Image 1 (cartoon, rainbow, N blue to C red):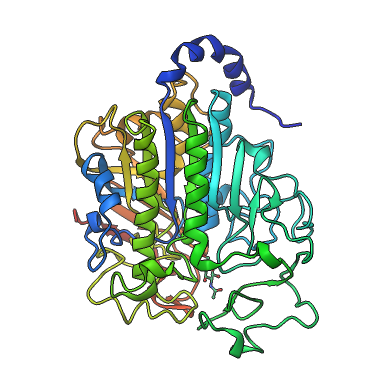
Image 2 (cartoon, rainbow, N blue to C red):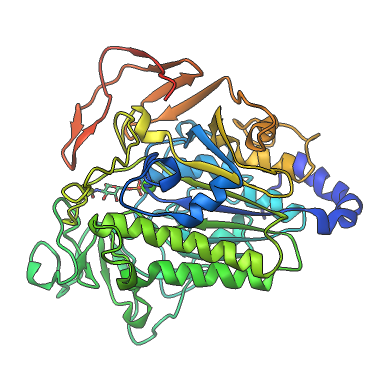
Length: 480
Ligand code: NG6
Ligand code: CA
């Protein structure tokens, strides 16, 4: 049985009367969480060659933060921190997860989805998950309902990719079951060995008709693209990379339409712009920057569909939309998509040093926009220090549970004032974690990177400085 934090339990008992009265007043919350979109990748943050009118609209009528951070410079630990309010370095096994990892957030842990659910919200996670499923690594039976799943950590509905688009299994999982399951083609997954007779990118490069790899990504082939890990079967359940954005957006739109009468929390985690970048044909060529740029345009389209749906249901005013990214940008992340060659003057890092994986600023400083017409009446830019680690606690405060403090180990609830633009300074410090789990400490004026072992650059992302150094590093932060 799910153990509920005693504070929350008392909370849930205390809620009904107060909440019932305010039910219509409770804001909906939509978190649009991009993958690998860098500080400089959106037009309102200075991007070149790509238009992002829908994201710009959120920024123009909301708050655009210039010193906001994810918990880590890779996906799994950032998402872990965001959903639990616990720094990922406090817990083993929060590194970049394989597609057959067991569920990293345990059912007895409190998540932001639990908080919303306890307050009477309908909750959903749609899109990239990357936090594992089931109770044992590599032991999931993909032909049955996998347990535990997102139902057990507060999500009423889920339609997810188990890990990343470049990791098997390449199927969507809906409430713990493979979506559109094809019983004629049972699914088997392994991160250790191939299944007999199945082609791989390494041995059968002639089958890579959609995209070639540059580093890694040479195991099973799905949709003409090599992946990390081996899988067999899937049949009609296998995704088509060019339709991932359409598919998750359609599910997000349905979730909003179906729950327009109740308050809802939607965690909408896009696949864009993670590799393999393979946007739908209708976005191809829009930016002149190849697949990576076109995937940013596709991301903006997804944002537009969410806004449109909220507007059509007359919900935009009372919906808090937060748009951010899980970590900084990378160009060559293992596929030959010419992301670097076609930049044409665009700077995904927005002038910051490093990138995804790195200790330096571009690793964790990410776009962060808060749009909430009911409370935020005009567009603003905020230099306040913000961390995604506060998400759970800030949300608890947003829905009037402010007297209940310390629901999460590391979040600070009063940062709600910062997120809504009332406090212009924000946190006193932010802790950031690099891929090798090395920590940095950022204050309003300084950044300190703790000494560690490790290479200056990573062989699969040759142009990204890791910031790993045996010497401690202290930098004064420039204003822009
Ligand atoms: C790396 C992958 C990279 C990406 C990353 C995770 C190789 C060579 N590189 O291991 O392509 O999948 O993991 O990205 O395999 S994240 O955004 O989900 O953290
Ligand atoms: Ca990522």
